[in-house]
Length: 267
Image (cartoon, rainbow, N blue to C red; front, side, top):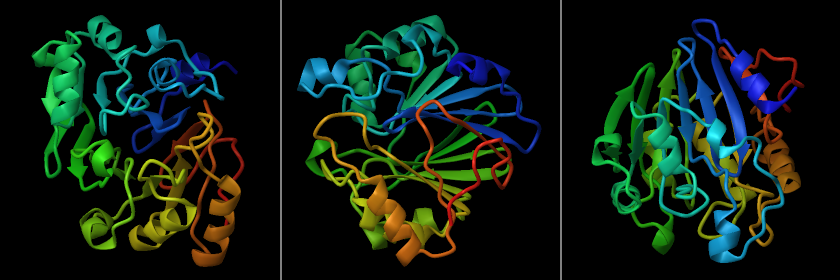
């Protein structure tokens, strides 16, 4: 089934949440009202144009097909703040809002996006849009993005913790860990200041989610990420913790467990 057919045909019941992986750190969340939240969507070839890193995985959808009710952007790196597509997304969807830290909002204004569609969202901020509750939590992306954030999303009675691009810092992550995440979404590439697979497992053991979804790997040449190592470390260091490798473009339907025809979580 084509990605857009999966997205359009996804109709979560109350208490259910549709989760789609766009690749890299990009996700779409669809709630029972049909509202769509886009997190760090990267759908262009901007990183190759700007940084020379070729895409290994092609986008699962055309930028013109992305019509979210809300966007949540963790920081201003090109593979998270995709300014090749976001001005068009917000222009097509004038009621949509983009939540992001100060640097993200400044760069969006510089790109011609109306201040009325931007919500500055720095660490400690809380907000909501439609049926999604949003909270910005600690992330440490070093000099790459000094105001990068982790992101907590509450929807349909579930809590998702997107760690964002960050190193592992146990003490600073204890607050987010205390919130009781159902799903943890974590980078495993170990480059550009991000956690490697072993450090990501340390975060799993701190957070103790019902399910962990690894991300931020295999999108670019020279970008790092070893799914095999994460799989091995989870089995050795976090036995009994469920984790699931999503395929780019895959959908999970979540109601406290995975309720799709996909394979069950690994143990």
